[in-house]
Length: 341
Image (tube, rainbow, N blue to C red):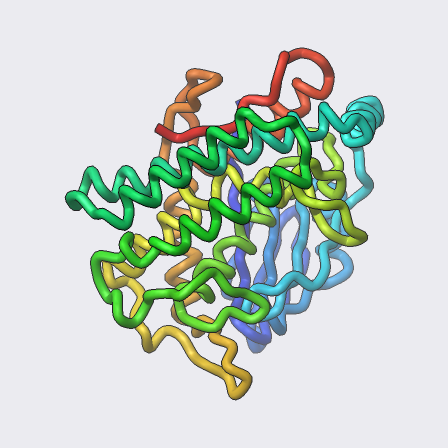
């Protein structure tokens, strides 16, 4: 079993990362703030004005530690990694599956089934824990209807994207019902991004960025090309397969972390700021709170329904990437999406 390693998130502006033997050293104003052995890391994510020495980047490339650079608000800028060492035969199988319309649609359909089942389960859990809600019950019924059409429809990626959009509108149309505290400050009218226009959307966008980083790393770790997706359209520079893989985890991982932070009052309206353009971003202190909650969530242990093993949540993207690779190699009859009970 793969070991869950740490991801180092650096958001203190003006931090300088350098190499010291086999150790990553973080300095601020000439003072050492942190030392971490390179073998304990699977990735480094730097937000905003964070610099890294060429020697550290070289060490990370040699050890397979990906270094990602993002803006302060979490928009992706660049990624530094070593030579791709994935199995070329697996990538050829991935390309053949992409070019096979039926196979491509079948994989896309299973990604979407995982997403819809998990969204449904999040809504049903809210009903179970906090009592009946007509709005949530209606949303569950509509999502189940979309799920039925997804299962019954021909495996066509374009049609599936349309059904995904329909289900997404239903899910976020009742999202405010999942708030049990601070509803007035964190309610949303719809899912918006680029830029997010309210605190909840800003929080979700930030967390989705973290999830995308983990999914991309998981795919590359098993030898798959994160650019060649099946549900999301392929575009230059777009990690389409990482976006596909994310769909299974949006509701059960990101959305639940975001809701917990608000419902438990670990975040407040003062933790967000609005620019002159209307864009909403999180404050430095809020991002620290989010990162701590994210890392803690990834340490939780769950039972994987297909593998029947107990694993940390942080390993789920890796396990799903591994199952996709096994399907593409012909070891499985179909790709089994992750569906949390």
